[in-house]
Every structure is written in structure tokens, then in C-alpha cells.
Image 1 (cartoon, rainbow, N blue to C red):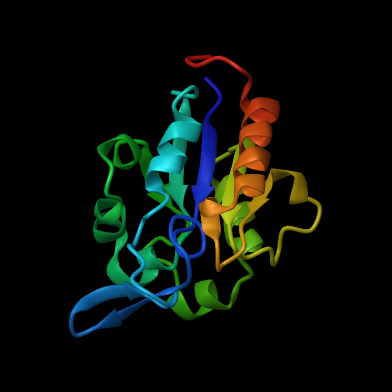
Image 2: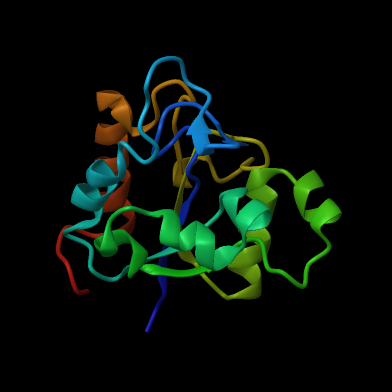
Length: 167
């Protein structure tokens, strides 16, 4: 059975701005009181018709906090249960991984795991040359709060994974 994957970044996708660690915990760099993962319900709704899609985390959170903590940071069980891996794997040299363009990180993972059917949601577009049709590019300041990006996401899901679930 063919694997269907969404490579998912957090910062600039599931919430506005980048996240950083403070003595009070992880917070958003976006001005005002911005809730981390504010757009998680949007992603859950987008993926709902596509039960076959797995999530592979392409976020730097996996490097900073480890895979389990990064996965468990997702506030919705419906998203957490889809997570099957991360582009950053602990045995990899972290300095080399951090220096790679995001698209290159994803393409290396897809090749290593023989994944042909995939999309990526990210606010970075570096390294996606030749694969821009698989990237749902978000603006860091708006993430999945941008209706045009959500519509593009919906369209790319239909194109790549079909209109019905379970297939």
C-alpha cells in the first residue's frame, strides 16, 4: 500500500510567527497574545476527509525538544495520532541537518523511506526546486490563518490524494 504523507512544520504554519523558549515556556514571536497551535483545528478539518494521510514532522521542534515532545505538543489527538515520524532523526549529525535547506531535508526523508505521494506545509521554501507543486507555502505572519493558503491546501490535497477518504 502506498504511503501518503504530509510533511508538517509548526512555526509559521500552525501558529503565527516563530516560537522560542522563555523561562515561562515556549511562546510565539508574533506580537500580541498569540496562542501556539492556534490553527491546529484548521489542519484537522483539512485532513479529515483523508484518513490515509500520515504526518511526518519537518519542524525544528524535533531537533530542539525531541520527537516525542514535539509530537505531544500538538493540541489535538486527531493530529497527534497521524504522526509517524520526523525528518530529524536523533542519530543524524545535527549540525549537518540544520545546515540543509528544508526541501532537501524532506526530499532526503522521502527518498530514504520510499515515499512518492507527499505534500509539505511550511513557511520555508528553500530546497523545493522542482517540487513547488507539493509545497503549501505559508507566510510566517499568518500561517494557516490565511484563507488563500487554506484554499490552496484544500486544492492540493484533492489533486494529490483524491476526493474521498480511506483510499
